[in-house]
Image 1 (tube, one colour):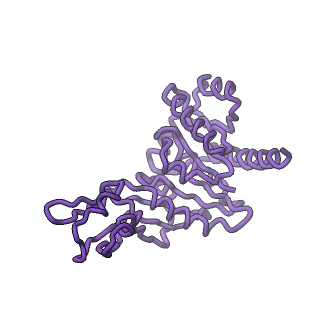
Image 2 (spheres, helix red, strand yellow; image 1 turned 135 degrees about the vertical axis):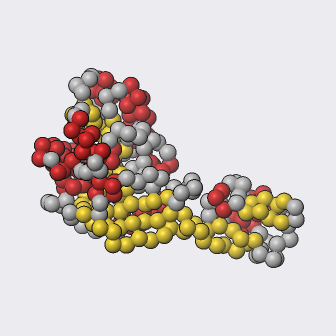
Image 3 (cartoon, helix red, strand yellow; image 1 turned 180 degrees about the vertical axis):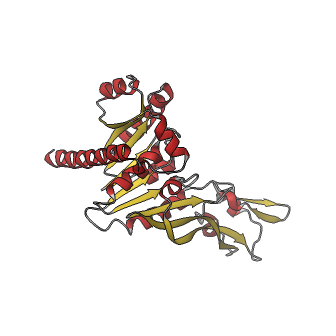
Length: 291
């Protein structure tokens, strides 16, 4: 079972939900937590796993050799403007290159060599029975896609058992990075908060899930009893799977970089929420099979 934990914006508690659900499932089910928010991963701050392996994600970029005739075909073909013929030489801008290889294909004299540059990394570890994966984009880089694709490859190595639960902590928003990290999930959990900003960005996330054809439900964080999210979900026929109350104690635990599973009442809440999510996925699958 693969679960994508998303939010329309940052700061709603997405990682809090993902981390504590993973810790709640781990004693009874094989569980893997994967942090796809590669631009600012912070799940490991709370999980504090024992890192057992780290690997580098590389992206190829062109290097022009002496066979170049300065014809300019490579720069004309590059839609990312990573090459330019200037002053009798071909300038290469590695940070703009997407590694598509088009420049090498259009070069008629074989003047384009490919050189790898480090784009980011993948860390693997374990904590309290939770297998932990995170992708980290190198500072100054803007291409999260290759790191996310590499992370998906690593994830597949952990999803070999029928009862395995994969918790994908996705980036906030509705970018391509969100799509790549959420696709193929059995259920998307949209974490939101009871505010106008929360509602606005929840609507964006809901539209994205419907466009992708993913099953989804809402988890209401910082629930202060306000009706704004409930009214919207009722109107749209969206299931609110669970809620986490507005409580300063949660903020204090979070500020210390600890998981909520250390406190009995929050541990019980997340275990109950976890069981409801498992039930929700099974019921939706059964409904789809009958349909």
